[in-house]
Structure formats: C-alpha cells, structure tokens
Length: 199
Image (cartoon, rainbow, N blue to C red; front, top):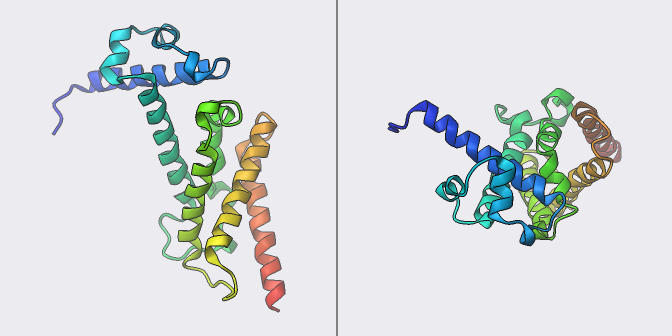
C-alpha cells in the first residue's frame, strides 16, 4: 500500500499534466525534433529537475501521452457495451457512444495526427486497435458465412476513423453528440440494408 500523501500524488499528477499539455502545444507549431526540454518546462512553468524526476527524455513523455490516449480510446469504444453480455446495434443509443467525447477531450493530440511527422504510423495503430475492438464486438453477432470477419472489422474500423478524420479536418465543427448521432444512424442504415439483403 502506498504511503505517499494524497497532496504529493496530486502535485505529481498536476506536474505531469502540465508537461504533457506543454509538449502538445509546442508540437502544434514546432517539429518534435526541434523542441527542447527547456521549451517544455518553460511553457509548463516548471523546472528541468521536475521534468527529469518523471521522464528521462521528451520521447518518453510523448510515449506516455500516446499510451494514455490509446487506453482511453479503448475505454471509450467499449463504453456502450461493457456491461452487456450480448451487444445489439438496434438497442444502441447515441448517448452511449463515447468515442467522439474521447476525441474532443484529446483534440490537441488528434489534431497533431495530420501535422506531425513524429506521429507517422499512429493512425494505422489506432485503426488496428479499433479493428481489434470491432472484431471482439462482431464475434457475438451472426455474420454471413461468406464474409471475412477480419475484413469486416477493418472496414468498420477505418469507417469510424474516416468520420473522426473528417471531424478533425473541420476543426471540430460539430459537437460530439452530433457525431455520435451520425455514427448511430450509419450503423442502423447498414443494419437495415443487411436485413433487406437477407429478405
């Protein structure tokens, strides 16, 4: 059991959040390779000693940011059906879809995906993660025997990512609940078309 006082834990969390926000802000206007530790701590209003207490270098700081976003992405995607034994699209509601709230919360990070060379390959990583989540989702559903479920999972994952990309490019023109409503409408449309094709 940890003996660290809660006030120390809060201070550590606050310092790390400040460092992460500073790095993401700097990456909006500078290449990662040109960002120094001094740049980061000055913007975060911290000293270099505080930085090195938590991270050996800026690469480790960025990796922690990425890991946290990926974990939250997974949690957000699973939110609508985490307490269900069987997931049914027909019973899904827009308010249960949390993935767009996740993207909005991490808007600075997602905006960087299209700008920063250091994040090259991360879009594929995100789509791969989404594909794995979709694969788990559809494993409990009846699928046409001639459909390759891995291809179906990739199709749905890249479709969701496509919606997110358009949203990012629009500079988040629409609120998260509108995006959730659009995704739900598309899922219902696809489900309707699938039912029609079987009839």
